[in-house]
Amino acid sequence: MDARTHLNPGLFNKLLAVLVILGALNWGLIGFFKWNLVTALLGGDVHPSAASPLGQVFYILVGLAGLALAFTYPWRSRRVTPGATPPRYEPRREVHP
Image 1 (cartoon, helix red, strand yellow):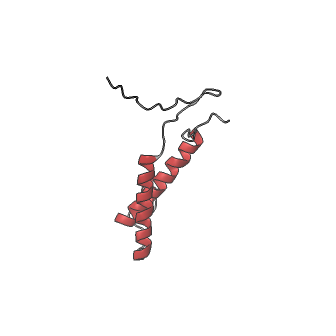
Image 2 (image 1 turned 135 degrees about the horizontal axis):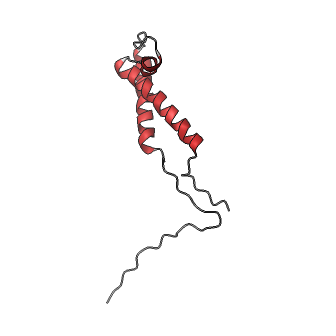
């Protein structure tokens, strides 16, 4: 049996998560405020052309998804040493006199 846990993001996965979150937040800024963070940082027109209302809703949803991912992504890794068994949950036993 593999001793790895599902909550063990490596450096590469963390970098990918940061890029996805920043990209989604940028789309959210475009959807909410029609302002592009990437072009503000890297140069270019920070006010993109007008998007359709449906497109703007899509940008807002992508931005909110990125915000949710930023708060729910497992940034800390839980390490399990190979060969070690994870601790078992033992329910409390009630003692009756």
